[in-house]
Amino acid sequence: MSLLNSLISGLSLGSVYAIIALGYTMVYGISKMLNFAHGDVIMVGAYVSFLLTNHAGMNAWVSLLIAIATCTVLGIVIERLAYRPLRGTGSLAVLITAIGVSYFLQNAALLLWGADPRMFTSLFKGFKTIHAANGSLTITPESLFTILANIIIMIALTLFVSKTKAGKAMRAVSEDNGAAQLMGINVNQSISLTFAIGSGLAAIAGVLMCSAYPVLMPTTGAMPGIKAFTAAVFGGIGSIPGAMIGGLILGIIEIFSRAYISSELADAIVFACLIIVLLIKPTGLLGKKINEKV
Amino acid sequence: MGSVLTVKNINVYYGAIHAIKGISFDVNKGEIVTLIGANGAGKSTTLHTISGLLRSKTGDIEFLGSSIARTPAHKIVSLGISHVPEGRRIFQGLTVEDNLQMGAFVTKPDRIARNLEYVYEQFPRLKERAKQVAGTLSGGEQQMLAMGRGLMSDPRLLMLDEPSMGLAPILVDQIFEIIHNLHKAGTTILLVEQNAQMALSIADRAYVLETGKIALEGSAEELMGNEQVQKAYLGE
Image (cartoon, each protein chain N blue to C red):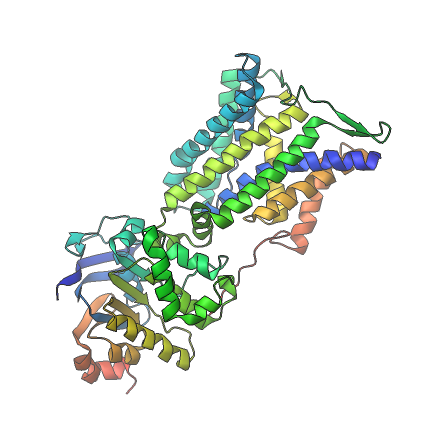
């Protein structure tokens, strides 16, 4: 049963990674940049929800909605102010700027909310933990809802990019920015929308993650951000199902390493797996191979 | 026979490279005008400048009487210019039908179904493959898709960049047959081609580009008979 318990925790952690990885992968797909500030948007989302619930006495679910809205706007503003002016310049400039934005967000949080770790109140406080098989199988509401949230987000996002006009336009811009403009697609709008969706999802990931792992600090988003980036690369950066699979596999590897090998080595094992996958398949598990037809 | 497109003294640079050196030309309603010239003469660059992906440092570009030299690329499409780029550049991961829908991105919803029917009429092969992912099409089919996509926005000016490139001779004939039909149906066309023979056989007028400048211009017939053109571009 402990195996099954670990699997559930792994899926739950992996779901958080998957939701964050979506933001990385979609933004990479459309603007070919690695948004290293993405992890810190998670932290901002968690703080917004935390402060509204614990200091303003707001309902936790309402605070989640406001956190999503805040991060959505934050994502659009970051893209507009920091990344758009650099579009068309070298990718190194954008990368360095993204790291700068990441530090900016962490330090702004430090200034605004202080360095003290806060104890985050779970979004699922009122829900009961499920015990099954004579108590040997435990499913926390956090795990259950995180896994469910991930499934719903994946379905919704897949439908969005495959069925709606805006979603198809996003894929068109991802594939060929110039050709998309020749269709009359406003590339700036498409990129803003991608940042908005990715950052909104980051807020959800932040609240879900802090519900399960309740310590909240200005650096809270950094490590999961890097892990989710790893997940996105693992699954094949630019691919939405890749982010999902990469996230889940990474979460499961991490929890199993922790449970059966060593909790100190867990992160090292995770990154070692990434290196192995990239050595065997440089484009990641579901990465698109680029083939051009004459 | 009013002028649809007027290009006046444009100069385009790629960084330090002066790619277009003061080109002027015009395209009248219902005409096929072709730009011919060697690789690197500036043909594609000219089209990219008209469709707004590149900017000219000087001069002006007028479409139906108003300047579009400063209009963003995505807005130029809705004014009525459709650019079918070199190398097709279809969206490989999208289905054939989704590609055509993207071509109709700025088209009024009530015209999309009609245009789709028209494109399928012109290219029955695309209808057969409507649900297929575009990246799996053959080269000729991809060119048809690129042209079909370009027609979805009800263009008043269709700009075709190297539609025959990389195609088997039988497909080249087919593509030119289609261009001829579009012309008969009243579409104004600006055609860029390396295959000067084919281009001149179908066009009303032509401009010969050499290293970013217009070297010669005239009716297609005249240029076909021109000794210089025959030597340099028709291989005679």
